[in-house]
Amino acid sequence: MNGPARLVFLMAVFFVPMSAGYAATWQICRLHVQIQAIREQPTPMLKARVLQVNAGPAVTECPAVGQVIDFIPESADYQSTLPRNRWPKPGQQVRMRYQYLDGTCKNDGDPKACRIRHYPVE
Image (cartoon, rainbow, N blue to C red; front, side, top):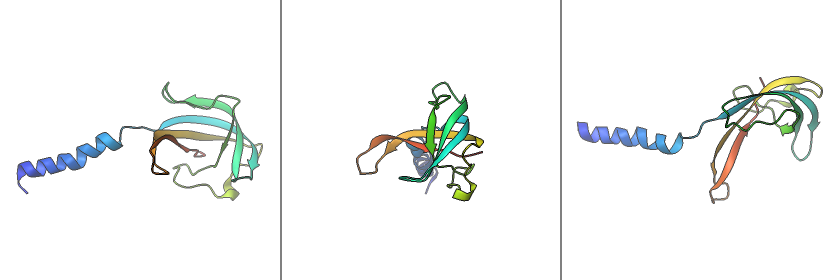
């Protein structure tokens, strides 16, 4: 592959995907919550009341103080769900992140707007 052809190839590999796939960024809210209960049905989740919110940019949509949220706690790197024996207990206060990414999901083959959410406990 000669010089100009290699340059065109590299531009196609590196620049085209960046414009299509890397436009969105994670929006992050840092929360201080109090665990209210462990909800068992239909899926085990924690129910917590938001005590304090530290939002990221002004456009970030964070839960309000006093709001009750349901979530499955994740590891700090949000790569895995915490084992049930490591979940905070009712009455306990914890710091956590609520982070989301708005995008397009194709669950049924028809693209729709969706929000990918993560709840890592710190």
